[in-house]
Every structure is written in structure tokens, then in C-alpha cells.
Image (cartoon, rainbow, N blue to C red):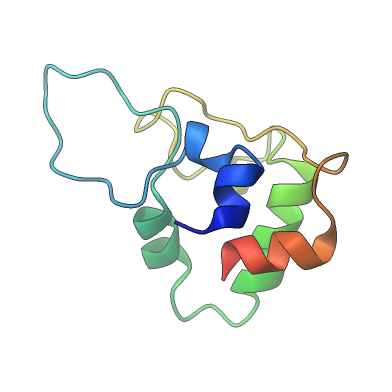
Length: 93
């Protein structure tokens, strides 16, 4: 986890690794960075797509909410006031 992710509060919701699912455990708040990386791996526009989600949030677009039912916080809130595009790209790398 980067210092920027900690400083910007990303680590409050996201974890590095999803770990082993426990049927009796509560859902995590948000997908792990590993799960996000696996979902977007090999996609040509992944960095730009994810940077836009970091800045603008995921809204109600089901395409931007692939973790529905797997995490408790389905939508990501916009972060434009605390993160610029350069930082968003750094975070998603």
C-alpha cells in the first residue's frame, strides 16, 4: 500500500488482498486492490478508467459496480476535492 493511499484515506475502505472469504464474516467495505487489479488486468484503458472512477465515483452505472453483492459499499464516492488526476493515476498504478 502506498503512502498516498494512506494519506488520502483509501486504506479505510480498500485492502491490499481479498484474503479467504469467510461465510460468517461481514462483507468488506470495498474491493481489495488485488481484486481490482485482476478485474482490469489486460484492459487497454484500465488506468484511465480507474482514475476516472477514483475522481468521479462510480455512480449508479452497473458496469462500474462489478462488486455488487461482494462488498458492502457498492458505489464509490467522488474524490475530486481531495485528489487530482495525476494522483488518481498514481493510486491506480
